[in-house]
Image (cartoon, rainbow, N blue to C red; front, side):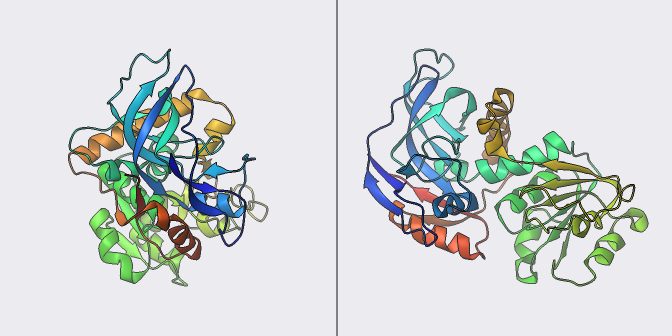
Length: 329
């Protein structure tokens, strides 16, 4: 089968190429999926460059998010059949998904409803589940809360804006002025340029009592935790997607903030099946929203397998908004 493969780790991503590899074999609790579409995320270039590396054996297939049709089911799989359309977030410790076929644990897949394109489904998992896990599972987002979203024009941030708006929150988006119309279309009520020197004052002026936001989703680690904690009210909640911020300069009893780390891949690394199973439930929620047009998959680029290395370079350079989807057929 054809696949986009990393043959060796390289900072210039020179180890990425389209090549032929064997179709993967499935275990008793797995399904074999004929992949129709995959999507790219920043973690994909980091892994291929060796910036973040979980101990792969090389060569290794690129990408973690995909959608397709079940071609075969393992002997102990009872809830799925060949022909079912499915979407999932893959383990970065197993072979990737930007290939004609992928072997997938049956407990992590979600069903794609009729009318939802494979490309739209594939755009969701890594970024969408990250935002959902942070806001809904960990921060227990409530209607009427004030939610501050960093990187609102990107994948995780864009889904976070939509999730918060659908849950009835007041959404403050941090984005460049040229992205304001796009971010507002996703559901943001207020948009602030994250480069403003008076960012803290701007956020506090919008929130009740001038105290700051209830919840902040942080997609880029600002190192010193106070940079984000200053945007929250006392007893607020900070969701971090990048590594945890540096709390060494944060005085005790000053913020009393709850800090939530979101790391989807960690559930696979830890072998913690309950969270892996929740990937399927989050997928069901997103597919339901896609089917009625309440969530945008934010697809900005649809590319071929041969263009994956080029677009991972563009992700590495920064500036890409929305999602990149790879057509496999």
